[in-house]
Length: 258
Image 1 (cartoon, helix red, strand yellow):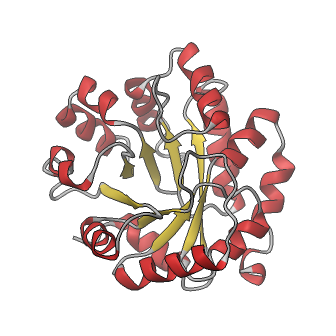
Image 2 (spheres, rainbow, N blue to C red):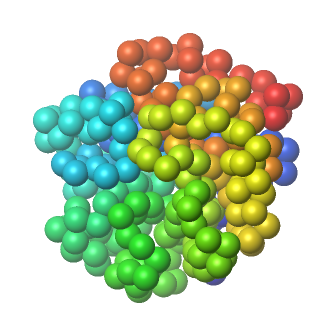
């Protein structure tokens, strides 16, 4: 089943690369989160990855981890985040992708989570600590829905492993550009470019890269051979500092620069 998130990305990439910002739900309060979503969608984001704060975020670097701690201290969790999205779904015009870990989903109950996510018009789901061998824990609840279960491939994944994961991903395939957590710096060197070319050749769905993309220049380099990028720490930090100029600068002249 070809889900609407994939269609949105493919429609975007007819003319330019896809850009998916990541932000932390409830960092600074849900009113601020809604303001950030509106700013990013008006700036030209293809979709938005919304992180759920979690106490043990194995994939998060220091900037995103700090945002998660701020949100947790404000009482933000998976349940009230989905309630926030449902209450504001008419104001949110771009696809929302939830990034969370298995524990919060299991704590809520998989069936309940999926039901509420669909009610909140969530279009994608990323679970970094769920290997492909365990995907049926979630995917069995997603049949005949428009909620895409996005898979990640790493720099150390073998060609056969990449092909296996690509075949089972929905929406897009997430190519991780670092051996580490978010917030480090990706180089975009020839070794990485060769890896991304390989991933793209093995995937029938769009390929987007994430981790370590801090600025427009790096985004342009890394997206040369794939369909777009996911940018997290840079946007999280800019929003925390109230630096809207960074966001406007990142998105301006999208078609010309890409």
